Length: 151
Image 1 (cartoon, rainbow, N blue to C red):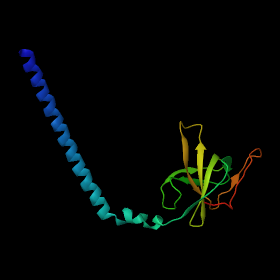
Image 2 (image 1 turned 120 degrees about the vertical axis):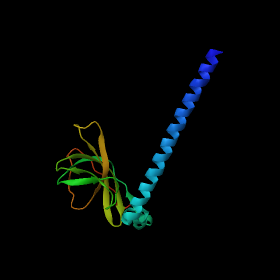
Image 3 (image 1 turned 180 degrees about the vertical axis):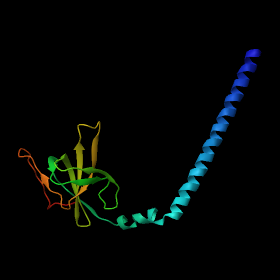
């Protein structure tokens, strides 16, 4: 009898604790929703309307074989192949990169690249615009690029 009363009391305490936790989470969600709404109202350029220019953008993939190259001059890597995309990192000159793919967006070429930085525990992957960027290809790398067949 005493054990069952003890178990019931423990269950009631646990239920009350969980109800309080749920209420706290609800309050956090309401607070964050209000903050998000106020940010969108105060900063209209950052809302969903800024994506309208890319909705009808045509992207053509240009087939290339992935190959290794070096960046001849400093540049930066972006998270997506668009001018307004956030910059991930700067790339110093003579950085060893792997060119993965190439796309044509609004008459501009973008390269998807991967940087294998041995000092970091991860491989940095992103997009670089073909705008004044020169690549130095190692002499033993065979480069096959077919720009006639676009998809």
